[in-house]
Image 1 (cartoon, rainbow, N blue to C red):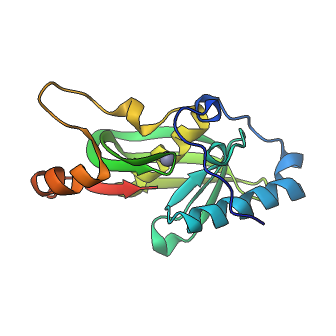
Image 2: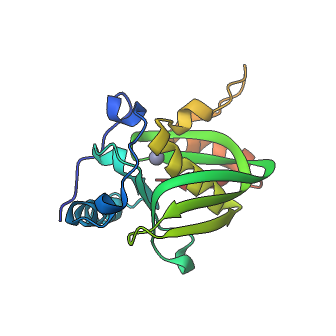
Length: 182
Ligand code: ZN
């Protein structure tokens, strides 16, 4: 078990399509150790989710610790289906894009089909902020970062350093946006 170094934006591992795991691989000691490292690394950096590419492993594994009452979910080989196209904006952050926040609009109801650590099929319906958290994490398995999804407009600042976000952007947006830092 180990706290692993987090890959930062610019590292090619964050842009690769993560490889899906076979049933045999999911049940292996290596996958168990990878998940333990993800958990330790996420806790160290106080994230609410982390994906394997963020610790330089290009495999389709992510862990999500939201919402709290649901406990930690290990997601392997996921497929996302949008159930409601209605979008909501949240200020997102990412362990791989430190000190930056970006306003990202995403569908607010999705279904995720995935395999668990026993290689058994599971699904989860994520709504509201949880839908944003799942989409952000699972984007990492497809080489996508939240900054790719920020909609830029002249005269607006939908991306900001964390300090300026807190100084200038929180007050005007606090009624209608949530916040995600992972
Ligand atoms: Zn992230």
